[in-house]
Amino acid sequence: MTTNPPTPTPETEPGPVIVELTGIMPPATFPRLPEALAALWQSMRTLPLSDLQHDWFGYYLTRPDAVEHVSRTLECDGKLTLSFSLRDSPEQHLLRVRLAPPRTPPLPTTTS
Image 1: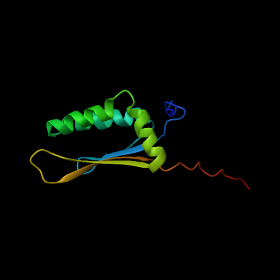
Image 2 (image 1 turned 90 degrees about the vertical axis):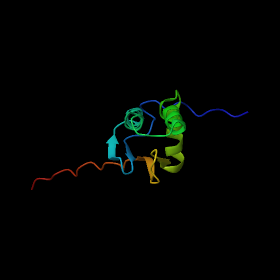
Image 3 (image 1 turned 60 degrees about the vertical axis):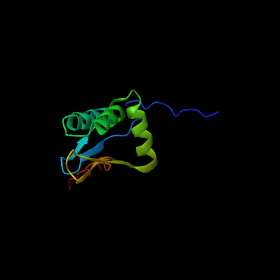
């Protein structure tokens, strides 16, 4: 019997993340994964995708466990990359989600 990993919470979900739709949407950083997935779907839903791709990406990015699923992928691989193409175009595009590099706090200033 297998058990599912715990559902990410704002304290445990990965963040910040960088998302991108190559050739369509430049990389953008989001503090939290739910907002990043919502932004990806907002951008993708208006693209001229095939009906199959539209339905698949709509489900993948908005399903009830989307954050949990993508969180697990980021935890294991550090990134998520999915390909898609626009209707009547041979060019392949990529949906990318990756962990943003950790921010280093500024060094304290010293006075002499």
